Length: 91
Image 1 (tube, helix red, strand yellow):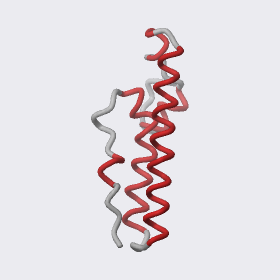
Image 2 (cartoon, one colour; image 1 turned 135 degrees about the horizontal axis):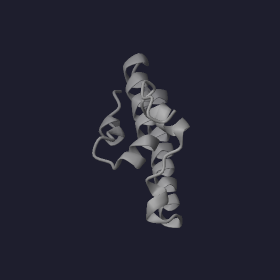
Image 3 (cartoon, rainbow, N blue to C red; image 1 turned 30 degrees about the horizontal axis):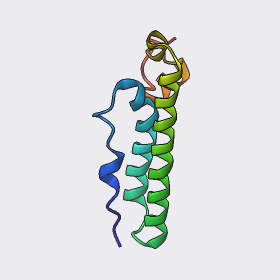
């Protein structure tokens, strides 16, 4: 039973600050989808990972609503390194 939720882990259409939240989960989903055999447990795990990703993105949107617009653009260096480990601009 192959999973069909991979299309919901795409993140390149999101604004950069939401990609920082979504990208690591989407990348993990791609690895797990390739590594694990198809079956009911994999399908359940992928659905739960998708649900978690959606929750984290909504939390980031809620954070945006609670901050001023200038603060939304400020990304913590640790989150930046998760998205782009080779980047040195946040040092």
